Length: 103
Image (tube, rainbow, N blue to C red; front, side):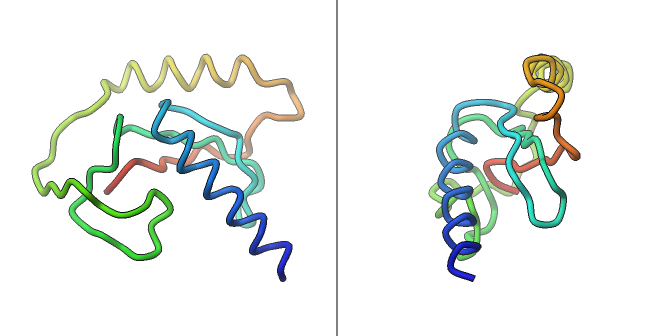
């Protein structure tokens, strides 16, 4: 049990650090999905309309309820495609998961 908690905490620290820097990150080990490549479609700091205490990205400092685009879909696609090309066969993810800096 302690090992699970430590692994979960470590993974969340990686997500918090990496998610703010890039569109795609990982692959990250997932208990449910195996290996998951994270895709962040909101650049920069967290933007959200909620402030959930369990959010892996942290506290909300900028609240928004207006829907707006951040990255063009072509940019996200190109970034994820390039990331997948860099991975060797054993590191290929089982799933692609959208984990944005907000909701």
